[in-house]
Image (cartoon, rainbow, N blue to C red):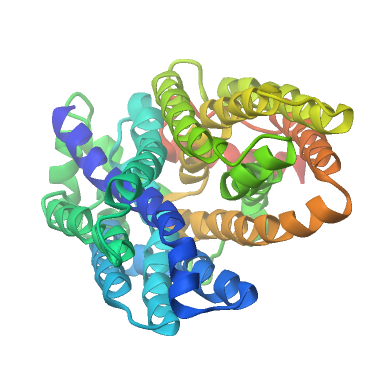
Length: 443
């Protein structure tokens, strides 16, 4: 188990770089606009958002290298992309060069949401799979917190402090890339490429108490469904595809990314002063970390479905309270407290479950493509919804926006009750058969 834990943590460090890369630009935001004299529209759409569009492209196309070159090699490539992005962003002398290097980092973020969960789910024993894959989400949250801290410590070290903020990511990116060379290739990917001897060696380490020959036969049988021209959009895969789509859709319809991007603005809308910006970033980061850790601890004990119940109810309560605060004009610490409750509900529910669940529900030969679909849905909405927030706040008001998110979470609860299967402790091959049979029986 020690080796599997080390390999899982190593792969999950792609999540740390994802979290760090996503948030680190917040420290350089105003400095870059002032330095290059960019208009609000150009600064927002090109300088700030280019990494996000890189993430969408990485999510759309990340399934190809993950399938063709393997999970491990793709994760090494992601580390190289992060390293190039960090160095290039730190050395850039104009907004277009900066945006191009940020786009490269975004490609790494998007692809990592496919390759890392796929790799960990395929090397993890069924009983530990949830918490090992959830380490990826924990590392995202940890990376966000460290980026806030790094920006705080590097702020004011000189007029080019933003260069250090952006460039320092190269150090963890380089260390991660080197570490990735020490992990084995995914045994399920190796079997799909008919490299049985290599796969057997890895499976013997992962499942020392199981009949390896029998396990390999089961994996081979599952892979025999890899017929020419098979894809996730075929009728028999409609159920897992729908599950991935709805999980990603509801993740963003909670308003999580809209809140993370505009927390200071939301607090100011609620009548708090600008000095709450520090409270919002550090407080949110800490709350997110603590409850994600709790989610990682509980995911294999309570199961994915139970955590989604807890998260959904927490979402509905907290978002309804935030909406009421805006409608009724509550001031002071009410809104921050309700929003911290919202962050806790997200971290223990959707935050802990999404990447685990999507990595489990597709058959081995279509896992990377299926995850690419779920990840692309997630990232497209993560780009669109926050972009609408300033306009929506100024037209229909924050109260209506949060009420809409609360209503969407009622629909998520209905999805969890009536549609979401429990995947805790079920071997991947068995799970694949169950979900395909379920699709046949419901079609």
